[in-house]
Image (tube, rainbow, N blue to C red; front, side, top):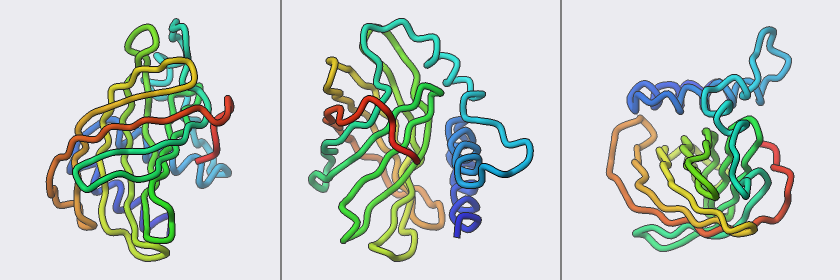
Length: 180
């Protein structure tokens, strides 16, 4: 199953043509198959170096929960920011489907950062229905983060469908990030 999903994510990464997709794919393979010889940790990503050297008053490192609002309404979201620059995303409630993704985050100033995630969407315990190229600019106020940006949405075959504005509001639930 991992190979099939990674293959689809790789095709999306080629279509989207973004470095973050390749970084997220490499991180997902390294995390999913840690015994692979020569697998490099996510900390080797360019964004990771920036994240590690951040000199902001707050850091998003940890686990966050809240909501994402978009044109079709709102839903639950969980984000985990790692010191290496890796970010993991989970959306939906699982009973009706949802998404999971990986990407990178990097500081942009004091208490501000950006993150990019390639999210895989699926029906509840069913097939992949599409992908979302999540691109957000965030502001942190110690235990809360608000971010907004434009997400590009693709179908299961990687065909671009549309772009949509999204706003994320989350609260810190743990100072250590969850696993991806």
